[in-house]
Amino acid sequence: MNICLYGSGSRKIDKIYTDEAYELGCMMAQKGHTLVFGGGDTGMMGWCAKGVHENGGNSIGIAPEWIGNFEPLCEECGEFIYVDTMDERKNKFLQHSDAFIISPGGIGTLDEFFEIITLKKLKQHNKKIIVFNVNNFFDKMFEMIDELGEKGFLYKQEELFTIANSIDEIFNSLE
Image (cartoon, rainbow, N blue to C red; front, side):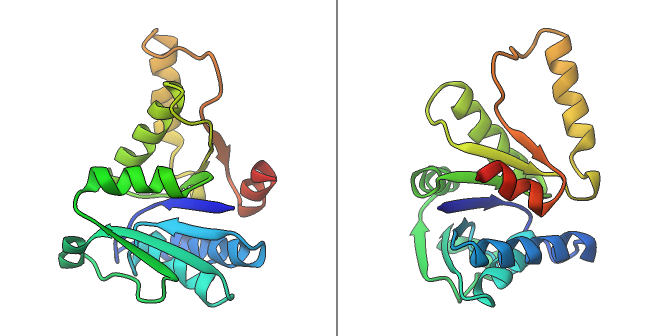
């Protein structure tokens, strides 16, 4: 299965998060899954990729070439797809992935998350979306989403994503 990871590329992330990203990558490789990601060599993306590559796994990086001006790109990817825009990048993520894991990140990660759940809501795909809630990172966002529903801004007709608080929960949800 090709699993897309959304997550931060920041070098300033606490080790509690990057350790989990690394372990996630290890498990992905051990289970024979391919990592699809933004191609970054740092942060959540980079540590997950390290876990994949150090355990004999495969990855597909997708990024515009100019993103290298902001963060280093991973050189160990089995395949690297260069695109012109961030929108094209997100489209390629959808095209090349069977499931999505949202790990802790910033504005870019939230943009990717909200777009992928919106597309699912609009029935443009029916792929599994799992929010990896490392160290309760997303709890305030879940509260906000619940409040949006309570106030009538969201229709809660179906489950758009699953919350996983551990790597085991991620893979139990995928299998």
